[in-house]
Length: 322
Image (cartoon, rainbow, N blue to C red; front, side, top):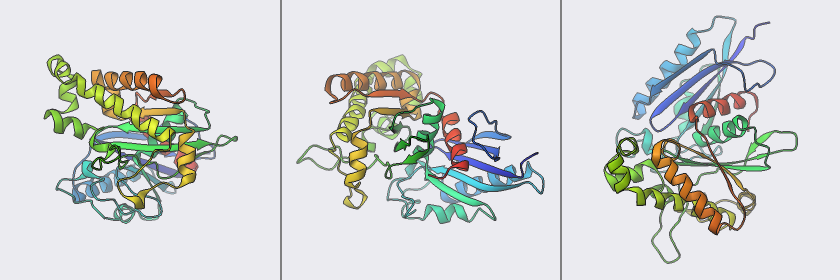
């Protein structure tokens, strides 16, 4: 019997928007094919993005006929927010902005919920979709698994897997606002040293441009090696519970810090970390540094199909709310 319920998954990245609609029946299957799937360029700015998502949802609904209906919408969105307080932290959604700071301090759940009618909206940081999708696509069974996404910005998430296989989130997972400055030094946000924006600011070239030029790759190789060391150092800080946030109100609990310290498997996502020579340099440098300096063996797993991974994570969340 054909299902009457559908779920829409929308993954908003720094540059691309990935959309899929799935039939929602009794069991989650990773092999479930989307009945509608499309990728678009993200339209920057509050009004532009709102109108784009509105059109996407309406297009999905036009693909089905009554009594079939969309009853769940899963959105993965960049930005520093929690599910207790959906207000975006200042400067944390720069990749969505057309003008400076236009997404600062807005309630991102209310922003998207206006687009819903009878559907139930579930809103997550986009890194959480990547983390869950990466676990499923790689058939991982470790007790705890972290995610670090180096794209336009810097995303993070941590999941744990129960003995029954259920996946749940640990803390908010945000690492963009980790203070990676040394004691006595000025505060230094992790995202300001490990992201596509960092590369653009230092080189005046986009990662895509540099990956296409042997001359630029040679000129800036030391920068990408530095980023690989930064990636490894962040993981080592998490292991040693040497964790400080730029703002204390975003600090993790002792319980969250303890669970993160026990994680020895990290999914590495994001376009910068997984595309071209830049990604290879970052990942290889990080692995070498971890091998030499990490207090315990660390496994890094590259997510080479981030679009598929994020949509798979969203599909899982159509069935299991984390």
